Image (cartoon, rainbow, N blue to C red):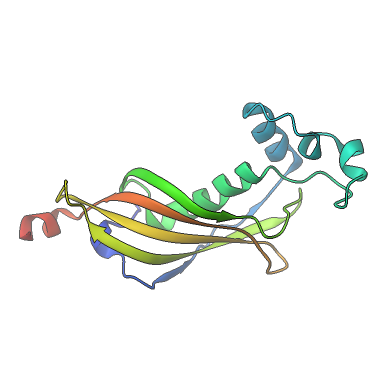
Length: 155
C-alpha cells in the first residue's frame, strides 16, 4: 500500500502531487458517452464552435474524477474505506482537450470515527490546476480512512 493512514495526516499539510495528466478528446468522449450525457457542448465540435468557447468543453464530471484520482497515489491508495461525500465542488475555468492538469491537496480537518475506533474521517480540499496556473476544479472530499494498527492498539 502506498496510501497514508488516518494517523499520518496533519491538518494544514499540502500535497503537490507529482503525477500530471494531459486530457484528450478520447477522455472527454468516453466519459460523456459512458455517463449517457447527451450535451452537445462536449460531443459536437460544430455546435461548440458556435459557443463562447469555440470548441468542445471537457465534461466536468470527468474533470472532477481526474482531480480526485490524481491525488490518490500519495494520499489514500489502499487506506480508504470509502468516500463519504463531496462538497463545495466548483469549476471556475473550463478544461479543453490538450490541457494538462496537476493537483494540490490540503488536509482541512480530521477526526476519529465515533462508531469505529479503527477508522477516522479526513477532509481533503483538492485543486485541479491547468498548465496556465488556473484552478479549473476544486472540491472538498470526506474520506473514511483506516487507522494505523499501532494507533488502534494504543487507543
